[in-house]
Every structure is written in structure tokens, then in C-alpha cells.
Image 1 (cartoon, rainbow, N blue to C red):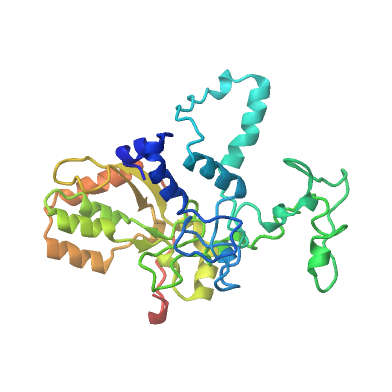
Image 2 (cartoon, rainbow, N blue to C red):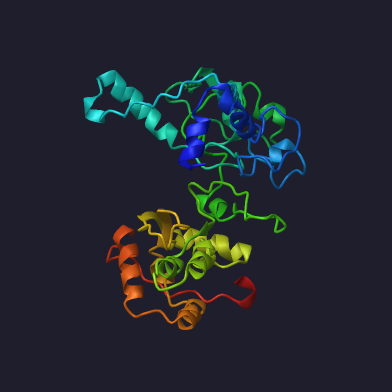
Amino acid sequence: MTEPELVTQLSDPSEDAKAARIRLFEWFRNPESDTYEPAKIPPFYGDGFGEYNSLPQVDLAVTKTQYQWLKKWAEGNFTAERVDVCKSFDKLSPPEQAEALTIAPLEECLGGPFHPGIELTWPLRNKIMWKEKFRLKVLPEGEQPQDDFGYWLEPKIAVGDDGPLDGSGPGSLTRWLGVPWQTDEASCLSGYDPSTYLPLPSFWAARVPNQVLSKDSFERLTDPNLNIAQRLKHFDYRQDWLRDLGSQYQSRINNMVKKWYQLGIVAQDPVTVSDENKYLPSTLWIESERADFEQPDPSFEQVLRAENPEEQVIPKAQEMVDSVARTVPEERPKQKRPLFKRDER
């Protein structure tokens, strides 16, 4: 999707490029469809995943507004002019600054799937929460949200008048999310169906990685002394981001609560492109800084011995990784690497 030739073709509103636009548009799920279409995109689980089977809500669709934009684009109803470069915040007028402060955090929100979600969740889809467009129905100052709606919260109470959605106050928007957030994050992974060709779909991969390109793999794929086939092998190899927390569910979520800050950081790193590595991308996202989890990996040591790298290659690759990794504070607590039982790895 980033090939310059394809981008140029899809940016052409003429009839000559219409077939290519239609083909891509038809790949997206229709948010109003009543058909289960797992082969379509986005490749993310939906609100109903894990609770229902073969329903459209099992997989995520773009919003109705986004789908209408895509439809207009596919029909050629668009202009291909480049968007103006954003102004510096200091150069905006006071009203523009106020609008920018409103837009900026919203642009970073992921939204769905609401299972239950990251920033907020399903109550926002109910009109009873809203006073008008883009304005929540806020409780009067000093009035606290009600928490007790009886032993059983029936749908007619949950979304009805005087229910928990009829007016928002402190905590009203986030009380529907997972508590603590770490257990929910460590529960929503990817590739639950092992029969799929790729480890997709997932939940919120843009914020919560599932499989990552490790520092070890990066060290080997940037070794110019390896043939391109072996380097591509290292490039294709991914490791689970949560691998250090164990594979047994209860152990993993408990460890996530205690040690979430020790997980690896994924940062962007440019790669020198040459004729020898033209099959590799020019930019990679690499996991590093795994805190005390970062201990010698026996399997990686076996690979090193088999490939017999020159001594200067590994330090050079390590220097590249360190250049984009954040600095770990000296006062960061040190913990021994946990040892898991055989059935937890």
C-alpha cells in the first residue's frame, strides 16, 4: 500500500484508475452489513469477538462516516491535492489553538473495538449520553454519578432514562473498562485461530504490540556478511511482546500488573538500503530496553554459533539499536528474571 506506483494510481480520480479504487474499496467491511466477512479488513477483532460466532460484530469495521468517505473516493468523487503542512502551535490564533487542543488527543484515540476498549467503550454509541453533537450530557456541578442500579443491570435500565448513561460525571466514561487496565491489556492478544495464514487479526496493535521484531533479530538481519536468505529469515521472525510474563493466563495478567513498565519499547530505526538488502524495508520498528528481562537467550546463542558472525558485527548492530532506544533511569528497580514452569513457556 506504500508503493509509489500504487499510491499514484489510487490518487487518480479518473475512470482509468476506477477499477483499482473499487477493488480496494470492496475489501473493506460495510459497517451496516449483516454478513460475517472475516477475509475483509480492517484485520481487527470486533465488539462481539469471543462472545458470538459468525456474526458481523465479531470483526471490526470502519465507521459509517469512514465508509462513506471511502465510497466517494472509489467513485472518483475526490481531489488529490496535498494537505497543507500543519502550522506551528505558536503561530495559531487563540481560537485555532483551542480547536487544536481538542483535536490533538482525539486524533490519537483508537476507538473500537469496544471489547471493552482502550480509551472509552460502547456507551458512547448511545444517543442518551449526548446533549448535542460532540457534547456529552454532563451532570450538574456537584452532582455525583449514581453507581447502584440494583443487583441485575438489565439493558432497559442500562441504556434508559435515569440509567447510568443518562448524564456523565467523574468516572462515568471509564467505569465500563477493565480494572486494572494491565489485566485487560494482557488478555487481548492476536491470532486466536491457529489455522489462519498470518497471526491476525488482533485488537489494538497500534498501541499494544503482539509480535515484535526483537533486538536479537535486528542484529542478525543487519549483518552484511550473511546472505540475503538468512537475513530475511531473521527479518520474518517475530517474538511475543509479552513473552517474559509467561503463557499461563493467570500468571501472565498478574505479572503484567506488577511488571508492565519493564516490557520492551518499540522504536523506529532506519536501515541502510543497498543492492544486497533491497528486499528489506528502509525503516524498521525494533523492540529494545526489556529491562531485567533482557538476559542471554540460549536459542539466539545457538544461532550465533551456527552463523559464525565476525566479532565486530554484533557491537555495531547493538550501537544502532541503542541509538533509538530510550535511556533507562539508574534508579529503575532491578528484579531477577522470572523462571516459569514448563507449561508456561
